[in-house]
Length: 114
Length: 423
Image 1: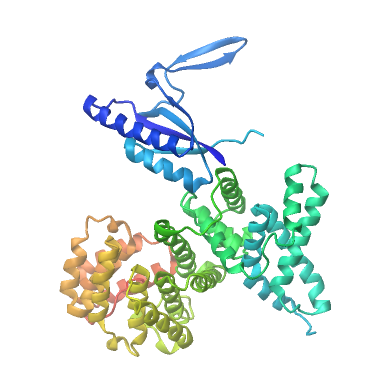
Image 2 (image 1 turned 45 degrees about the horizontal axis):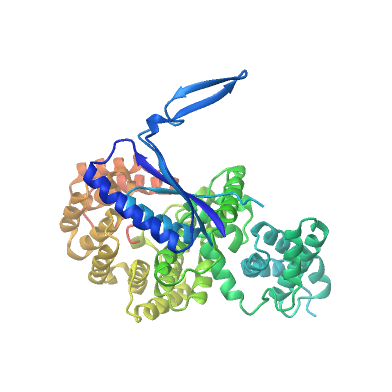
């Protein structure tokens, strides 16, 4: 079993409330399906990218920058860690999540901790 | 035992390398270790076979030797428990399979190499490396890529297979059609790269066609119930049958209508046509089968005038339904021009003027040819100029320049478009 990080890439512009509610409903159903299948490890929903702070250590001080590390129109809006037998299985979960959220999903294998 | 020449060992290498790597990848779970072991086995063969003669089963000998080398290596390096466990797995009598399930092993490997999570250029390089046994230098040369770039592409792809857990498995059920498409596309890409090569690199790249046909044959053998795999093989064989006639002694491109049909390879045509008939009988047509059928119709004609353009147009109608792309529409227009006259064909070509095709030389070359046949000389010359400006291939350019020169006379005699139009 490999653990995979599924990153949800989300436009910074927010969805209108009714549409957002529908998306949340579908994503919750997906979440439940992953849990029932025993594939769920961890989920983290994130606040808007504009709330991020980038920290760089410099001469013992912390240099802070307001905003996300990468400037852009899309940022990671949330992530889920799942466990799967192989990439095909992980891709199938990602496909379902992408369908539910209407957004692209980045699948990254996680390094195994021995 | 018979004495064995280096050429014979080379032949065994070409024929068996992919099988051996596939079996070893399955047994060892690691592509790099498998490749290394198989290479060592072939080195041992080059040393032993000329002296001892060819073993009864060369493939079995290679696989067993490679497996033993891998075990030796693991014993030497088995500081880590994981390696030890691998060596144990290999030593278990009913552990890894040897020769009988070899077919499935090769099939697994090609689906891994052509996995859609890998970039297309990585799929091509991996397939040629692992199943074709081509060296990194050979692949780099054939694709006109610097060798370090190609080497890095391979390392990166193999690393992704391992880290991301790309499975070593033949996809089942609903996944199979899409995944098979990727395998077929990779093989056809290899073939086309070899076929459309310009004269300077002709030799090294013709090798790619040979390799693609070898892979296609392997796939048909492994998936006898997939008519599209047969269709692809037939398409490649029929295209390849015209290689000798496709260029003249100066390396200039000869269009289909002007080719010396006596130089077409009859054996390849017979094999290709038999395959077309066999796959079409299954009643599950697809784009490769239809393209093969189009080529089979061309191969049927002893003279260009005998070509059944009506049937070709019908096949393009079908093809357009499967793959409604501007390129297919353009090729269909060529068939319509032959069946119903250049004016009808030109109208279809002109309909494609904002399809993105105007960036490619073939669009302008076909337009130029139709205009010339309609005696619209000035427009034809302008279209040839546009085509010449858009090709990087020296033989193509020379061909178009000859056509442009002919157009100055502008006799309006029927001459078919440049080759490529029929494919």
